Image 1 (cartoon, rainbow, N blue to C red):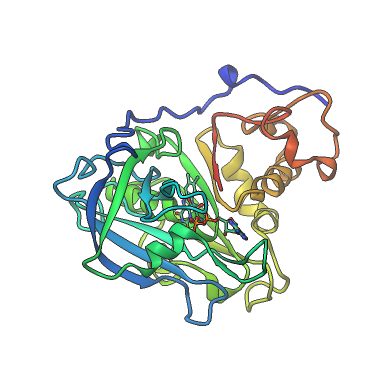
Image 2: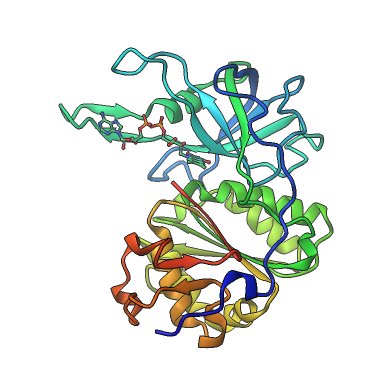
Length: 323
Ligand SMILES: Cc1cc2nc3c(=O)[nH]c(=O)nc-3n(C[C@H](O)[C@H](O)[C@H](O)COP(=O)(O)OP(=O)(O)OC[C@H]3O[C@@H](n4cnc5c(N)ncnc54)[C@H](O)[C@@H]3O)c2cc1C
């Protein structure tokens, strides 16, 4: 397999803005107040419970200090099975850089209740922090840290690039913020969002994103529903299937030197996406996004997730945040 150009030779590498990081440490989290909480699935009948939670950080070092795409930490109260204080969990900021309020005082996140059977006795296991966050009521106090993250950002000059955002589940959170930032900056390029969920009922911020698409010519919103068919999707699809199905529109965008790819959501989603990119792109454009080691099989179907990122290395034009 031919080795593509090194990152240094690839055009279109983004210049990311300088951002604040770790202004508030886990040793001294700040107190903030929940000001709104609502389900953000397309229907109450969704398979999971996902909440849009808004938190007022005014008067703390977090006020006006984050950028869309960054995360913040939540320190849940109480102790773990060993009697140690619970560790913080990270949550993506779902707000644009100016916040929900327009002045950086209120940030939002998109939290999915983590629900499982206990490993030991198969009783109901509720993930500690997601359920704590989803249980919080308006007016409750929550302890926060952050902000965190310096690469999963919209570049310093957003207009220099086009964007393909690919989300599964709560991976939509940072893209909601970034698309808000593009709109606020008067962006006129091309940004396509592909959102994947198991069922239509699980789509997050669906009505809001459809409105954005109607109002902004530069924005395209596409969905990939993996466990059912829909009127405009005659077969179930994962996000990588949507990429390939929309190749006619996406290949010209992806072969452009302006385009950046952002991937956020369920750990493991990246393998299918990287395979699809390799398959759908003409050979000369593949190296813009992927650098493949000599010992990697030529057939992407034989690629393995463990080959990422050492043997299958995304270039600096691919931003990935999976958890
Ligand atoms: C950069 C980043 C951004 C993130 N952004 C978001 C976001 O925007 N929204 C979001 O919802 N999440 C996000 N996460 C994930 C989040 O940080 C948490 O990992 C997630 O909410 C689960 O935390 P929890 O405390 O509820 O679950 P935990 O208590 O930590 O448990 C996690 C999982 O482990 C398993 N588990 C643990 N113990 C047991 C047991 N005894 N028996 C059976 N199963 C068990 C369960 O499957 C459980 O769901 C992000 C993570 C990162 C790294």
